[in-house]
Image 1 (tube, rainbow, N blue to C red):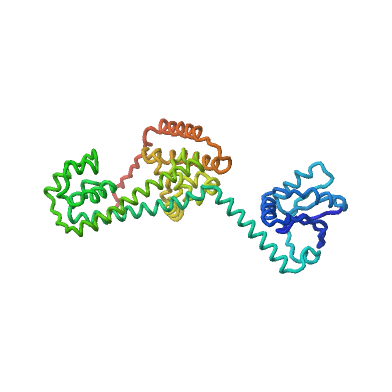
Image 2: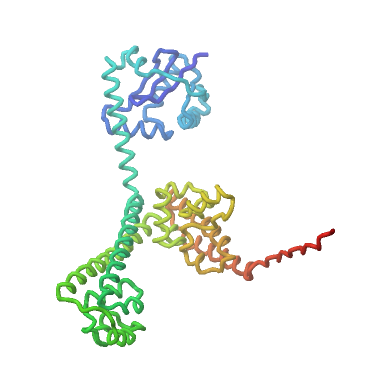
Length: 397
């Protein structure tokens, strides 16, 4: 019984009998088309001319094929099912394709072989990069990183402005705790003497501490500012406001990306938290392949390593603590709710990556029912057993 060994090389699909090539079909003369066929073959998709090769082998008296690649074996087995040719899987063995191609006259020199292989492999890499970039979820990760950097810059400017403007009106630091409101007051009004009910109402309409600000400015112990001082403090504060607007725009951009590329994840985790989880995981595919237990503690790596080292204080949640279902719940419920949320996030990510169908309403309903069940079942905190210390009796003797 003649046996041929089938090998998928970068230059074409090869049939070997020992060190002799008994059949060969190239992927085509067009480089991009050849790269596409070779790339598909690595995923188990057979080339269009495979039947020609199988017929040639059958005509030459070969009745059995051996294949080392699992995906190629599976595809060939399905194709030859019920036919005279049988396909068997064998463990991979080393093979010098370069020497075989040269010996059998498929290339004229080693340089030619190496050049052709390099061209095909480069084209395959370009195809895979284009395919990866065509999924717009790859844009989410740098957008999240940009959002985090902007957040840090806003905080730095806000704290710097409080310190700088605080020299002039220190009492304002205790009355305004929202960065945007504080920076607006500095930018649009400036000196405390210009503050009145009308100007403050325009800048921070409906603020509950408005009257307190007016009282505080009359009794302020802050230093006076020159016109130049005010100008630079205002310019500094304006930069903070510009970044706050950029952050807002970026959040809307991330939300739009999430609604298109990961609608189920966005519905379960929320678009911003979902995007942060996606970025931490390294992409939608990696998040989709993660077990729920890993998703539950994403972002709590330090606490997890500490637990593995000491055996104490296992983290119950990582970044998903930011979800309202978790952080607004009583402490004794958070671990169970975080577990339920992570499980649904895992399912949502898999649906978004593999099937891309929108099942957000179904997943959200199932999560809400599970949360309700947890809150009902564990409405009261668990009772802790009081440890009674045994009193030592009097010493004898």
